[in-house]
Amino acid sequence: MSHAQKEKIALGKENQTYQLKVGDKAKVKMPDGSIRVFQVVWKGESDPLNGMISNESPVGRALVGAVAGEKRSYRVISNGEEKIFQLEILEIYPKEEK
Image (tube, one colour):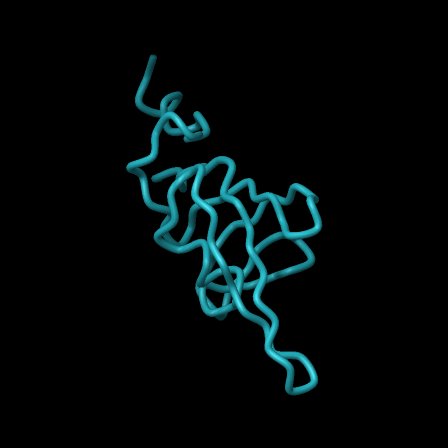
């Protein structure tokens, strides 16, 4: 298997040492049970409608440094009230190097 083919393989629970970095994508189980795929990008590159979230957003901060299989919490403040949510990182798709 070539290096390029290996990079395209999702890193699931069997590879719990790879930490998500900016540029990587992650399949995530959200607090409501839905499954979403996000790419964590730098602040100026975010496009939430297309799944590209900022590393400075609450979910983005929770994802950076996470490993597959890990549960992470994030907080959101709405109308002056703080709420804590938990998500689970199901798979990580490392950024393809050019």
